[in-house]
Length: 161
Image (cartoon, rainbow, N blue to C red; front, side, top):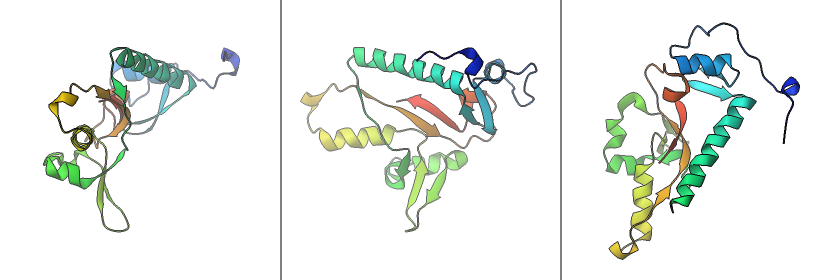
């Protein structure tokens, strides 16, 4: 659907934002693509979200054309798979941890290798089932000590596994 620029929810800035340290961050904010909600956390505005979805669409098309199959894992992950690989402690303060009302530990997914591995282990038992090409595009969360590269190194970001 085409939209007129005069009706687009868009405001550009004349000056660089004071908290933007890298050129890409300055340009995205000044151009009206994103706005900072908190350090390392961004809201995508209509023009930015349109661009974002377009990039995601292109990545999906290329992955699908290469024979990969898309899966989708949850962003809220149980402790156990990360405990088994020792990454629960390896990540240190770089992950967002939480506990539910039953005192079970969870984390907001910084990456999903453990879940990929468990899924394939549960569903496949023979080397004859391989090769297998899976991917996902998912929001990730990392408690960056000092997020400073705009949308490229934030606390919430999207990554293809």
